[in-house]
Amino acid sequence: MQLQKSLTNSENERRVVVERLEASQQTLAELRRINQQLTDQTQRLQTDLANSEVQRSGLESQLRLASWPPESAGSKDEELMHQLQTSQRERSELRGKVESLSDKVDT
Image (tube, rainbow, N blue to C red; front, side, top):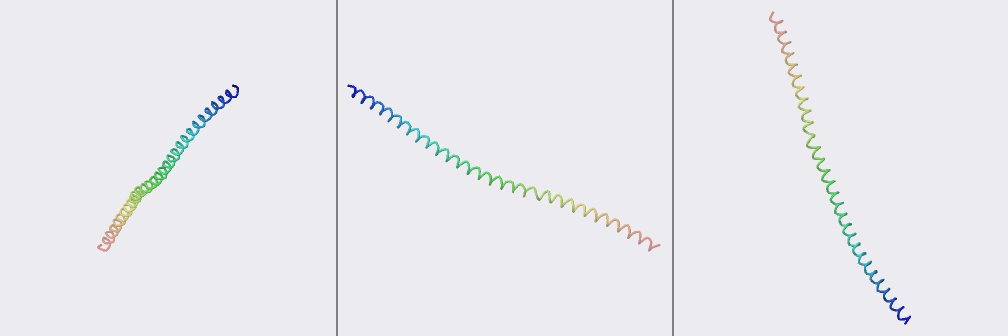
């Protein structure tokens, strides 16, 4: 009777241990699946981040190129305008000198 009781207790304990083992294995499998999903998601996000960095770099380059000529052109336009004004002033001064010399020659 004692032996039968011990055998029954042992089988019950074994069943409980087997159930816990199966539950633990299922939990482990689920955690591995979740871990793989998170690893895949992390990889996708890293790829997206790298692509975004490349795109950002390209857009920054385009912005620099787009804003560079107008500033340079504006600066060149100002420089050319200044040269034109200087040339016009010098021309006026030379005309004045020519007129002055012409007046002296005529008198």
